[in-house]
Amino acid sequence: MKIQCECGHMIHDGTDGLGHKGHLIPDRRWDELADAIDAAIETGETPRHREAAAMRMRVLLNEMSRTVWQCDACGILYMDNGHRRLRAFRPAGDEDVLGILSGR
Image (cartoon, rainbow, N blue to C red; front, top):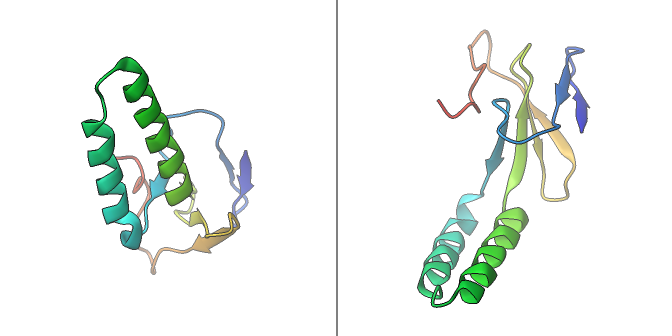
């Protein structure tokens, strides 16, 4: 996937572990996620149960999260809304926000 930023820079999403990509989980779904994690941990009696619980977690995370990308050139954030359409969010003034999604 490629996103053309408003500044002209191309944002690439072709692999995992990207420093300019993140996943956001809305707060109103946070407790549901925590409960699902607890349930997945508690159902790990056999390898088959653990595999099924892990798959349920992956599906739930995919349903709950919204993907966020940041332009490495100007810092604009692009986020999927609830309908998987991109929305842009601009840094305030000259604030340095580059690398905000890097996890460091």
